Amino acid sequence: MAQDKSRLRKTYSFFRQQPVYASGGDPTNASYVVLTLDNDLTNERRLTAGTGITITDGGAGGNVTITATATGSGDVVGPAMATDDAIVRFDLTTGKLLQNSSVTISDMNDITTPGDVAVNGGDITTTATTFNLINSTATTVNIAGGATTAVTLGGNGGTITIANPTVTLSNSSTLNVNGANPTIAGSSNGTLTLFNTSLTTVNAFGAATTIQIGANTGTTAIKNSLTVDGNTTLGNTNGDSITFTGQVTSNILPNADVSWNLGSSEKRWANIYTGDLHLRNDRGDWTIVEEKDYLCVVNNITGKKYKMLLELID
Image 1 (cartoon, rainbow, N blue to C red):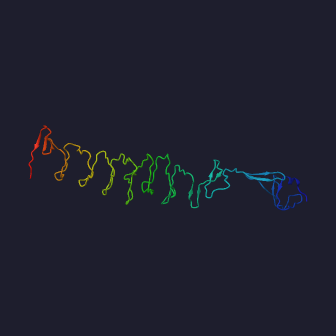
Image 2 (cartoon, rainbow, N blue to C red):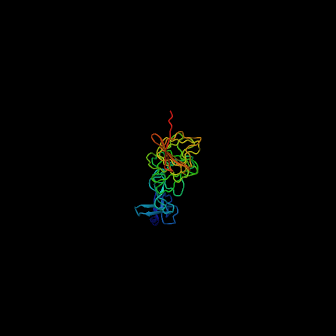
């Protein structure tokens, strides 16, 4: 059976069964693929290299190598293995090379990342009624970075609850409680300690013009020494009571001469305990001095002294 030797030199055939050649023509029952540059073949199936495919002839006795090259604008290449549920990310800036990451999204849509989360110019929002930003296993939480100038918690309404027993402000920090009627409140049945016991100086109020401590009922106790600068008013009605348990260690002076009374005609002091008694008005100026056996009355205007005559009562 004759064969076209020139055609066989131009083609490479891969047979799965012995072909049958027609006289002067190509095989009629061959099951193979032909690699050829000829365009006049009829029954053969030609293997044609498409876009991004390279076919290399290794020569007689060698291999025919088919190589795929990523040439398309959207073709990407990834790693051989990846982490389950991991979010893929681009490597470099070509847009064609993917790499594995440690950021995962679970089947329950939980996002886990071992690094930082940067939200630049956007918001973290939720439609749920309860939103847990930090899980319960975290022991230290840094809400804002070192360069943060302002942090706002909550909106104009609602309540912000800090369940931890201790809230610490760092050195030179300022806690501003703003609003028309801001309130710092403790438990209705507990004790609110506004400052700890180790502080030596507490500036409780700055430029506040009015400070109210306590409600209309109850008792406000100040355990240590109290110094009040400026004008001081004790009580707002004559029904308020002022009790002096301690002792006076300074002079008690009225702010104007002959303007204020000690007691009244209806409410008199029971007894006056004094050393020398000084009496002065717009007409006279006298001092009563207690001697051992008599009272001496001194006229402070003339300097004269008088002995008060006393009659013994049996």
